[in-house]
Image 1 (tube, helix red, strand yellow):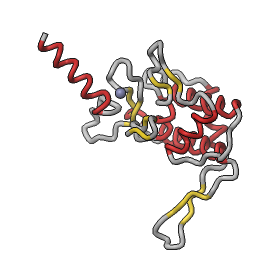
Image 2 (image 1 turned 120 degrees about the horizontal axis):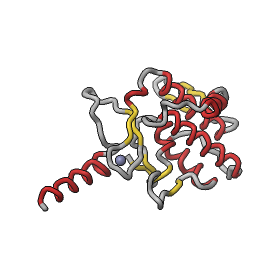
Image 3 (image 1 turned 60 degrees about the vertical axis):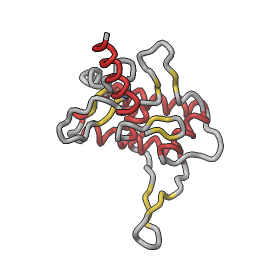
Length: 185
Ligand SMILES: [Zn+2]
């Protein structure tokens, strides 16, 4: 799924965070968390708390640091070597106050209590999502898209467990079309 030009294909928000580096393996890769506007736009699109005003460059750098720590800890070929510093980054954020879910008056709907430090709460929520993914016995279901230059990771929750693409329309059909053209030649 795409929202606001951003990719939410993985089924987990901590994996969607790692997908903000577009074309990780390509020379022309782009970073969708390059500055304050980027970070706020992404937080809004993923449905996490975000501030009204700008955030500092340090805060943006911290978000990117968390992103890269999650990437290395989760990635199918990198996750076998655990860097204690990556664990520390995730744990530091996960220890901070998360977003508080609150019941609305009808007790059938809910809203998020406005966080006093919205970016902190958002990064905490992302770090906690990573903790649950890494320690929840489901890590084996995390794969990287089979399209060579895609680099988006996703959690495969399909019954046969044979999902190959981050997104059928974006990557699966493209790969199929390429195979078809190759067969015709
Ligand atoms: Zn893909």
